[in-house]
Length: 500
Image 1: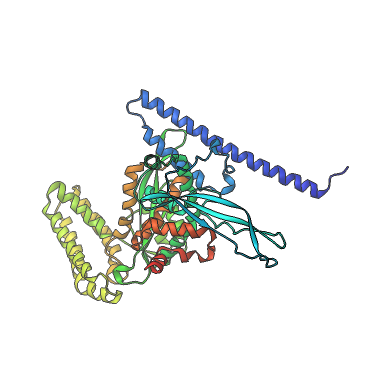
Image 2: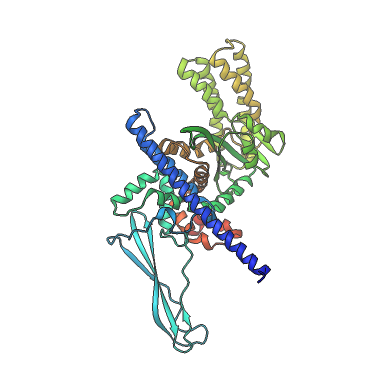
């Protein structure tokens, strides 16, 4: 009997589904094998090598890799329940229960008959409110019509992780604890254990990965908001990235692009957008800032030159970097010339303190009247000093650096939307620097990208005076059902306005 074209297509679809399922299982097993190899190697080094990698570092590496797996697209993950053969543990009896009953009503939507109860479905959710765990029981009675026997039940509300146990408050708490309070997941697991809640590090890592993947459109919306400004601040910082299989680390980068118009009374909300890359190639900022037109405050990184050459982005240098060179010389050598340079730069900052909060045109008038003569005087004085000292001294190096940067800093005198320094970006990097001391490195590229999403959300919330945990709890409760073309409604400054 000849097989029809429809049957052939059905067989192909079934075969493709099986292949996808087996590929997901293989990826899960590969991760488990890699995990066990790392644990075995770490135990060997910890026992026999006094200067080797510690178990804490292994925990950090594994949790970052697991976050990357959790952040992957759903089709790339193993089916629910297949991961490591894990089973859900019952929730502790000592946790308080909060019950919510969702009913479809008292009458049948089909014929108008009276409904009678025939059973119910109960969904148990572990959530976290500040200071304590709570178990939410979502009860959905199944009702049957006495007339037409039609069965009715209220739909289950959308949840951050489909068929998952964690509530939005718990997910927000784990993410904020890791990326704002810098608590690695294995430490959080131990803290939860003391409270009688058994949550493995790998479970928490999966939650973080899925949460950041769900929140990625919101981070992208913040990125669009940043690039819509007339002037932004840019910076990058190194972060160790472990190279799988080599036992070594390479230097990756975390980039930040900040928009803050508060110094000149702008109405746009402040925001910080973070990106992760495995190296410091110039192609990364070119890609990040595609479509941006305006001024960019930055250090002297040569990789930004590709942006400036295209003409759409104009450079503004940073006086804080100039001042730092002289501070280093003064602290190490006690140079009176370096001290004089610091004093002259302080005069420029005194003008900026008085200009802060004023409209752009007023800032320009004040700068032209007071800062411009100081700026010209500083530049002429630096030229004069350079001819009086040895060109090989650290002081001469500081002066040459200052003279190279000052022409690129001069635009701030003529545009009230610009700043004297790039401190907005440097402040935005503090959280990364503090976190780097606690979780040491990124275990994978996927983990680094998840961290960039989390930093974008948390630091932007803080810039707007919003509690990151309260806001993310609200967002994670709503985002699964929120239309992507209305994602801006979930931004932290909108939340601040709604809850004021």
